Image 1 (tube, rainbow, N blue to C red):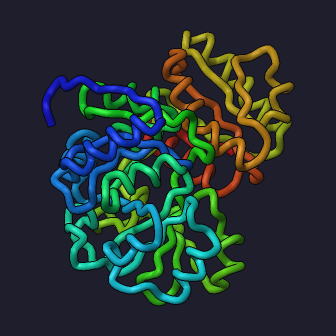
Image 2 (image 1 turned 180 degrees about the vertical axis):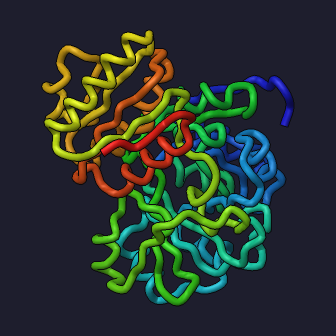
Length: 344
């Protein structure tokens, strides 16, 4: 990776797709849009994979998800396809579900972090699939951000983190989903959700009834089987305080904290469901919309916006209808951001 390289931003039109495909096929890396978040991609078997880790500052033992354009590419990635996997692909692909399966021996250890398994998905974003086809092989792609920062849901987020570190960003507009894919491990005895996402456990159980949900973080000395299980994640520069409970109690707690912050010259911001914004009409408060889909789509953008606006602390009012994917991400953000906490 050349130091101080020029990062070009191109439209997600045919010319941009062809340029990205040619760059990737030639061993380079590029940021591309998907329906979940922007990904930093390289051809799975190409020399660009180590450049992904260097550009992001990503630990080498954090595996990458492989993205395919259609099922004809699947044999390049996995050794076998269990019946459960086929049923899930029929139900949810293309879409935000990554399946961990036994890998094809041709998948480099740099992609799988030395594991005998690999995570694979078919993105729903048509530009992502077109770029994969233009590159001519599956693409390894984590989120296109500096490691530990909130994931990028707009091209400008990628540029803010990786300008001068990668050669190309394909601007496909804001991501529709806004959080990373659900990761489901099918390589062992029981199908296990390792990372929640837009596709919920309830939806998966309609296809594969017997699933488990991993609720604990990976051991510090273990190689994680999935991205998002280890290391700092999703943290803005601001302190993050997550609050949940009865709305009236939470509102009283937030106001007390907010007033103290202003007294000591800190600049707080409140993030909450649209139906709660009236409780904070006189304060710096931004709506996360209504329900899980809205909150997922806005979450990372709002965490980044708070930093841009110079906010020192974020009060995040979590409610159950925001969903497990949002809960997972905001608690990780609170754990990763210095001085952050969860209050009930």
